[in-house]
Amino acid sequence: MADEIINRVANSKLITVNLEDYYPQGNRVLFDIKDWLFEGFVLREKDFRAHALEFNWEQYQGAYIALTCSTDAIVPGWAYMLLSIHLEPFAKKIIIGNLDNLETAIYQDVINALDVSEFKDKPIIIKGCSKKPVPQNAYIMLANKLQPFAKSIMYGEACSSVPLYKKK
Image 1 (cartoon, one colour):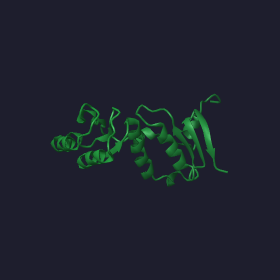
Image 2 (cartoon, rainbow, N blue to C red):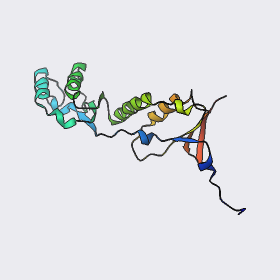
Image 3 (cartoon, rainbow, N blue to C red):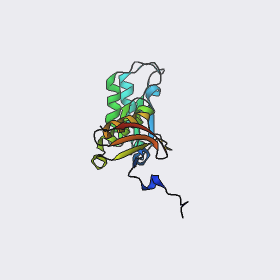
């Protein structure tokens, strides 16, 4: 059996970290307040507050919310704060921004909570391909978190990885 094929990747000490494995379940919602504004541009405090009181916030149970205004309206900071106070009992996370900002904020929480001590002095591959919407910023955050611990950090797949860092 001199021609036996040996899977060197499977036998290696490489540890693959797949950010997709940490993808939190829950709806991602872009909550656009333009329809709550007079003619889409003017925030009338009394009307805005009334709308917030009458709105069914329970529909966002367990959701991740990105608050935004898609028009060029000038929205005072308190308006977003008021919405977040109404959303807080139901939503998992609330930010101001777009869905990309929301996904980055979600992953920031995930990566901050990650215990990376198990990766001490180990060669790590951060898996690059994902079927879930892992933001590019998450890869940077993970690499920065792993760097003080890892022996080496690579990106991609075990069969075709790009070296990024090697401890001296």
